Image (cartoon, rainbow, N blue to C red; front, side):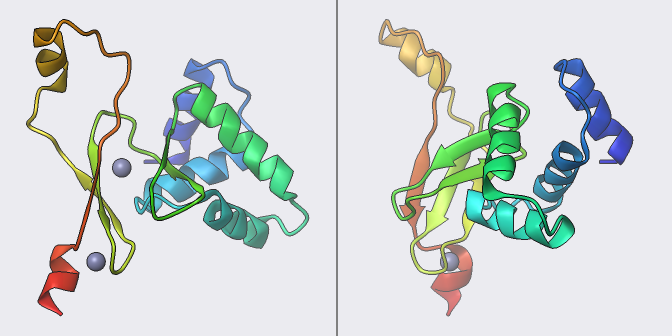
Length: 137
Ligand SMILES: [Zn+2]
Ligand SMILES: [Zn+2]
């Protein structure tokens, strides 16, 4: 995506376009590896040496609250992780290398839940195991 598109995303949600917000969006768009808050902070610190952890976390919070980015927790990490992809998808977490893969699901969870008489507001599925790269080694 281009800078202009990130600006449009922010404006569409009524958020002020700031350097910090643009930089975090660009970082997450280019690094679809579900970085932890700490990793985002490390990146931002390089770009803006005087930035505080609090500022970075607040910027991330505003993006999560406005559903511009997604956040999730994994059992093998105490930290919150963030994802530029906000469409419903599942995650496969490798217990060996720690890589988090996006998994497109063919499963119609909405339908499954509806059949059970439930109404889903949100869902989040993490699958844990060993990834194809680690299986080869
Ligand atoms: Zn792996
Ligand atoms: Zn993801």
